[in-house]
Length: 343
Image (cartoon, rainbow, N blue to C red; front, side, top):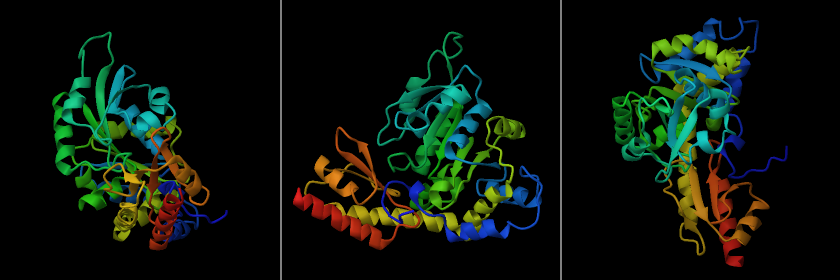
């Protein structure tokens, strides 16, 4: 490994030392596999308690797996999922919801990645018509793929209209910790009203662990079979559980996410008035989106890894992580200004 640092993704970050220590602590002796050990059961219970008494939590390997499992758990093959056109479900999961969950995605344009009750309801059509797919789930990302937030009231409004139509609300919470930190709420409050949550850990200091949180006991009772069939059941479950043990102990999730958010705010403030640069999205969590000249993008990417979000418009995405430092931010901001000055 080169040790280079950049702003490509919070997936690029290191593993938090507390997480590595938690893994090491359970790396002694033998334990029953597949989560049939007291430690894994206890951690799953504690994670579920972060979301309410009625919640149940199940550990999986990755975010795509968590999303697909949520949809498989509640959708028949004729079902459809309404989501934003920018949703990870639609853009970055290689067709897994369609191929594995067997559902049709009904995409709608969002505003900065967010859905509203009006646009959702316009996608609900031909209810009861045997010739048409039936909308079963509304899926939102909290925070969105564009780094923006749903307020508690906005999530509540979407939950209300979804439930009124007999549908379910899924929250893709790959960065739910960042959303809760920005909103100043608990994890539960940041996704209040959801029926299914994909709770992310990998983007917030974990090694390879995500959780599915379910609020319906009938769905939860069958979920173990779906998780196994969908190839997301860990044989050595205690090592996934240990990562979540660290994440929820002393609110490590909040400390990591709040720091990542603060670094994004610092970066945005450092380059906001730079000539030739335009910040394109509200900076509300740990992402900064900006437009730059193509030559400047190429120059910066020689030394700093980051993604070009839209090559045609010149929009880039800079992600901050739990381990992003002030020195990282300040050095990058200096390089951005120098590249713009030289262009």
